Length: 85
Ligand code: SF4
Image (cartoon, rainbow, N blue to C red; front, side, top):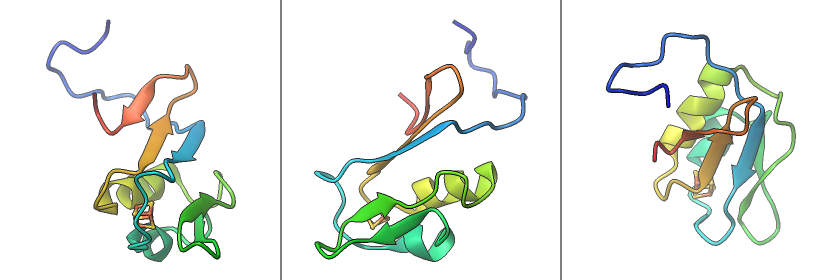
């Protein structure tokens, strides 16, 4: 365990970007924030077009912009970065 109440200071690395399609309501702020990463499909649900389509801070902003927290981010060790558990 490395989190005992302190903010992590190490640089943000996002290795995996997942959209939970059950949670996605097609509100699309993720597409607005990071169109190179997220797009809406014909069901009006977001999917990942390119997990490297924006820098990590932008992807985090996109995830935070999702009203249903349908965007899940993992670091290189496979730990969930967002939403915070
Ligand atoms: S912001 Fe969330 S709910 Fe809206 S399209 Fe993106 S993943 Fe779906």
